[in-house]
Image (tube, rainbow, N blue to C red; front, side, top):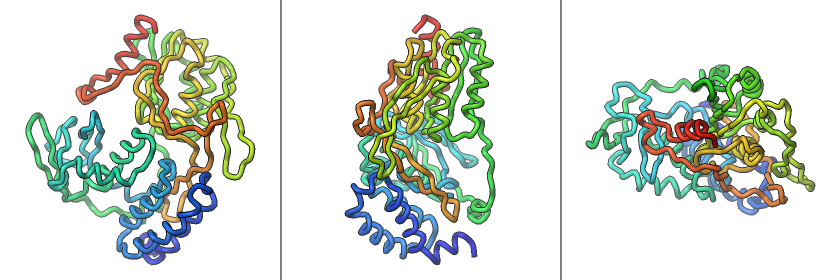
Length: 393
């Protein structure tokens, strides 16, 4: 029996297994225990009427949204293979970053106006009603994700403003997703841990795309060890976190002194454990100036470990960009039978005063926003970093 057939035949068992993990592992269980069982029963009934895997997965994620916790989400193989376009939001409007199907007339930077003749603002309102998160940055990210994976579908018509003109285009159909192959295939990590570029004789640039890569700390240390430049730009824009250990290891390489960035506690722990980062190698001494680029997609361990550790740690280091995401607390990923992933908040963070960390982003030292200029290949944030390094920060 295929994974798809098994889930369709055992819907309630599958959903209740997920619900049980929440009951046993969720760090804020006391806050949700009074209503969680009723919500689970409600979604079990809804899922009983679903006749395909995509609708089942969609309802499971909506069940988890009842917790109002952006860190506790359901990631599945159907959504991963479903995107037809990539988008961004800027000043309340949606723009196309890239089109992932062939023979499209839509250009990068086109403004999305309608989907199947429904105004994008109406769709945004419908999606946004499900995300009751305190952080607007997180809500915007989640709306974008759902818009891309659930609303821009094959055979749907999207309407854009393309070079000042309205363009309607039907999204072509693709071959059916092979769920069994995706579930059984062991796919190695193919992306690089870091991306580096020597900009000039004085400045090097390094991109840290995620803290989930198993080699990021080793590769970053090798990069620092081999660097001959006096200035360094570290780009963690769109880095939505990853392994806490990796974020701590990377941070420690640029610290001058021991730094406590707050406290952590798992479920049923009476005592708070300090999050203390010890400096390792003195790589900070190699550089005169370091600028770290951040944006609204810098989240989780990228902001609450890496940025919190390095901000105000040295006169050499400045944070440039926009406010970070505000995705707080620590999650654990549980892999299910079909290779879908249940991400659950299992530990909570406290600030240095032992107050529960609020879902607020971290403000940069220097605020610079990238607008639509990015579609023309102009990176305002990177250019400002280079300008500041040239004239000394």
